[in-house]
Length: 141
Image (cartoon, rainbow, N blue to C red):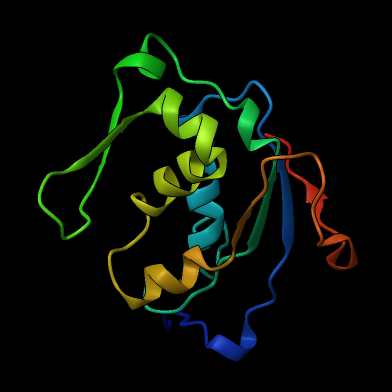
């Protein structure tokens, strides 16, 4: 018996459509990260990108549990003196799609393969997306 190892040209990628309206950020991010890595497939290979493409719409209507809108802080390093800190509420007003993409990014591998997987994530703050030609299937749990 031999272990199957997928080759990059053998992978057939699907397109999934997520509607983020009234979804909890962390729970949705774990489902998306699983699809991007390809762990839902029996042909999952750790050193090959076997994941699917994921489109997320209505990112501005995503939900946090508890008081995270006021208490959760996002910090980014700019290279200049002083740190840039903003709450989740401020980030939702300025860049609502970054909340979900940042949560998914932190669940992926921290290497070249993880960056390649993250490039297959498309997040849009409104209900429209430019990927109708790929015929994305709505994701159902």
